[in-house]
Length: 275
Image (tube, rainbow, N blue to C red; front, side, top):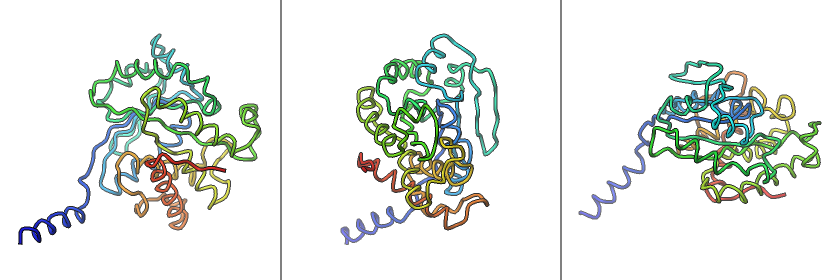
């Protein structure tokens, strides 16, 4: 009898939905974090019963070195984009230290400028930058994570792409290799695999997820990245989430959600795509 009751108890635990979460997340990034977190992410989380407070410390094209220098010197170079209860705000000329202190962030993501993302030598100041950011946090249990950016569209023309022989596959492989080489040494073991999700979605939807060769498209690209962040942050499988913007069909949304989930599943196993 006791064994039957215990089985029923654990069976009910499995069936019960996860409790709703309130998560405060800050991205210290650039236009690639803008693409990932400023649209669709709040709505995806809300559709599954969770609430996010989203901050983005934004400077277009900003690298690790520039973020580090800004924090050291107190430069007011940031736009502080924030989403609270679905309402977006934007403050200009803000110091990074003040953005970090604005909330008791649960999660803070760091990332490299996209053109440097597959070049290990450009990460020399990452450890010092992470330590300095942590010194300004107000949540003793804050979790630092890495935002994996994506490779450029195959037909993109830029001197920044030339460093990867103008090859999307080579750029993706260089990003993966650099993360594996650099991140463990600085204690960044959790990765938000936006770059993998975008690459997977390209296989099914075509190389149409960028609007200008490197930034994400306003619809499929940004939605795929947001789905990836939603599953990573909340721990809920995003495949089946009822939210998608009107500009994306249910079939397209399903593909984006599937590939975001696959990317997160691969990441938990520390696996990446190979060519």
